[in-house]
Length: 176
Image (spheres, rainbow, N blue to C red):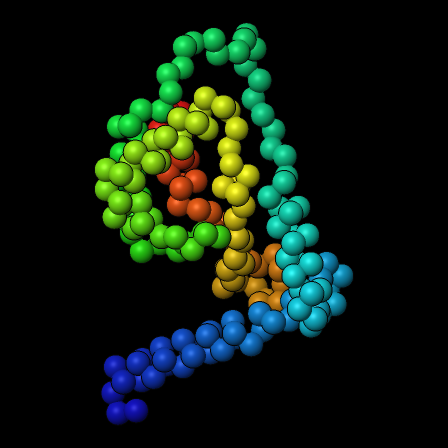
């Protein structure tokens, strides 16, 4: 450790290794709500399920508008241009959802892919019903790097959904 620069480099490497080892070795053991360490994989999965179920199904207060009248305006279906813009906005090299299809699949199909997506969105819009398989997603717990690594509340869930669903969400989001 001749120079301070070399010393900093060694400390940075040691910190990175320490952080990586903590995450990999301790993620297998999570504490339940009573502070008891769970070691069985089925118990850990059940605990994650109940934690995220409670977290994601929490009701938030809603604002009620005074007139309370429904929106009676004419609503046109999804346009092809909206689908095109949503696909262009999608970023490449993002994690795929439950179907393991990256967004590059839709982009590589070009005009044919836009036509397929447009047809799907039109059906959803007019039938007012979404495919059940689009609703399925994967929730991946990510450690916040704060607090104890075995405390489930120190994780946030990243929800991986199908890119087709993300495109639909972008269309609706733009309209809102």
